[in-house]
Length: 165
Figure 1 (tube, one colour):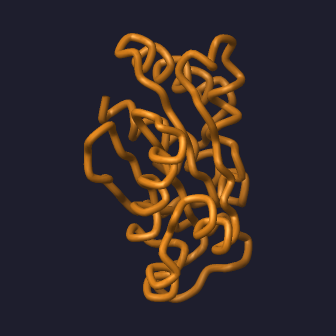
Figure 2 (tube, rainbow, N blue to C red):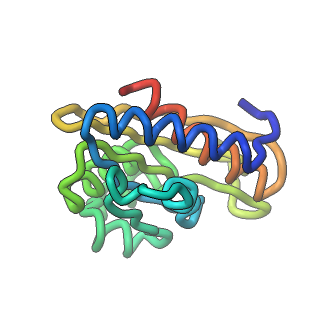
């Protein structure tokens, strides 16, 4: 993606997602690390979101990921918080905790610090899961400052679920 994402485009994405979820009578939950609840905010900025949005869990620390979402410590130790294996466990945990139909999870390095070899600043892992599906994951590398990385993360998270509905 790596292009500017403004508030208006995030609203459009959330509206499209809301429409799809309402059409199918489905409910969403989120598990967020690097976005700090921004995906949930964009969703709940829409009036009537309680019809299709259950909850957003901000699990910034590894402890929170373990306690709130059931991410296994061994997964965190072996792969690190920013990994597709961790977001797969996060997204399952969010869906199950909320008894939701769909869930989105994100974990990444928004910067300006925290990056390293193999996981530079801008690396974000995504997870999506449906009612009876196995999680789907992907990793993206975004450019820009902290806010730009986070905005692109929110946009990709919403787009990714729309693609799967």
